[in-house]
Image (cartoon, rainbow, N blue to C red; front, side):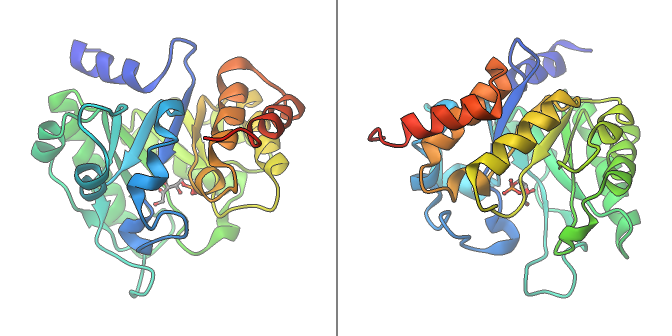
Length: 264
Ligand code: 5RP
């Protein structure tokens, strides 16, 4: 691996090989998502605890200070919306030249396997990988399910993750699911877990992140279940403990409970 690529990968993953990526890119197709209406307000208290931030160039320029940042994973796919015809019909929205200008650590793109736009999204990924490899910028592939959340099972996610790795993604972001080891075992590059829509309790999040880490994930790219929580800083601190300190769900819950009463 050349120096630039190796350096960017080292920015994404900590010395233990694990990572906590904080995605705040949801507005690119959802608009002002709940608790992300003002991205700067959402981000600022959480930034110290994130290993990298997944963000579009618009939010990066408007809401992240260049002298107080974390490694950036730039969302470079889009062009669709919640109210449009088909979320899967994404294209590339940001050039590699812009990614270099913004000094990002990686770029991220969604793929939509099994949809009418499977081929386009996979060829977009392949093209992005060609450009990223030319300049030493890793590509994170996002195995998107659009509105079809029920697609999140091991068979489908293993298929998507493997295809993403075969096309050259350096990191794959997918969803946690039952039998998650089937996903990680079939994917020869690091796998990180997204959270999906907010679940009812913090403990559910701690349980699935812990299970996923045991089954081979290297970390998370987890948004709504952090910043839509009533105590986002407590939540991110508790998750860091699972990811970087091998805390159990019970220990994470204790951290959350003790942190939530502190003023952040
Ligand atoms: C949305 C994304 C998000 O980065 C991803 O879904 C993770 O966020 P969450 O944990 O809220 O699902 O790709 O476009």
